Length: 253
Image (cartoon, rainbow, N blue to C red; front, side, top):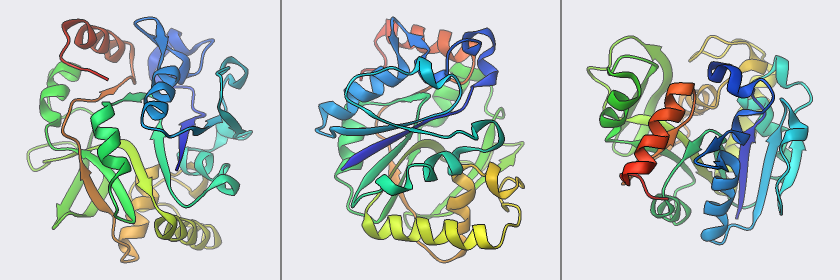
């Protein structure tokens, strides 16, 4: 099994923190987000780790990893960054965003999940959202699940009243799931219309865009439920909140 970490973006919402560093190299209590993820993956015997770089790529210098570069990161988004590493897709891969942290227990559970495509979701997201934003209606996307299969994902919405789950950014594909992912990508590339979920053009699609496209093509995306807290560092406030959470011991890697 391999891990692919998507770390090509700048992270503009982090302000001055990403003037000279890519988001994944921001330090949380003295250790970069990427270094923390690498330690987690290796702790569950995932030794082959691929990092897709872009913005300030020369600042990402870490031991025992493989680098793939998205040279067009300024004009593309996550799907294109992922497919820069297509030649390294294997029987099973875990795909992670570079700005999240999660527990070893949840990673082990994901690793052991035998579904073709596993999309990690948080059923207890509201407590964390209150800590991050002070409300439940900031940065909200739809996420609907029926009988453990995701049916809608990725549309920005303004009200969270009917949202039970939060997409995390940590996903697993086996060989069959990867074939479905690649077939969907190739199909969409040959018909370069905008992604329905975000409305973005083909080269600026989010991961949730291709997930919704797969759902629309009757491909099952299984929900994988987190049991523990997780962190996302998308702003300076997120970093402060994460530091406080680690300090008080309510989050353990």
